[in-house]
Length: 74
Image (cartoon, rainbow, N blue to C red; front, side):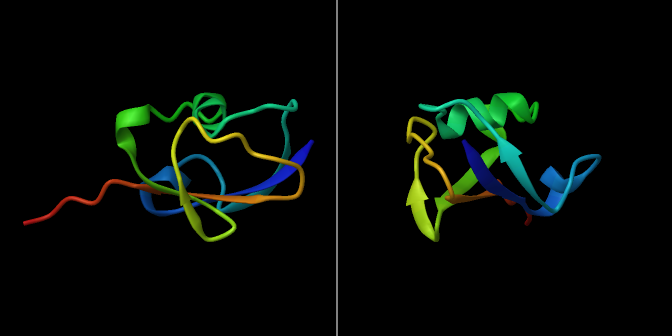
């Protein structure tokens, strides 16, 4: 199945900004993170079509997954 993946902030380093990617059916947000070599604890927010989701959420054909890292500061 094909989904659109959007990366933000430091997740774009040595990766991409937006890309259509192929994944097997029943792929979860966590599986996408693994395929991009992003550690789960680095994830701040994941959105599918603008709605907050967890790493266990299954992504389906045609959806857009946006991944934001945790933000630090002080």
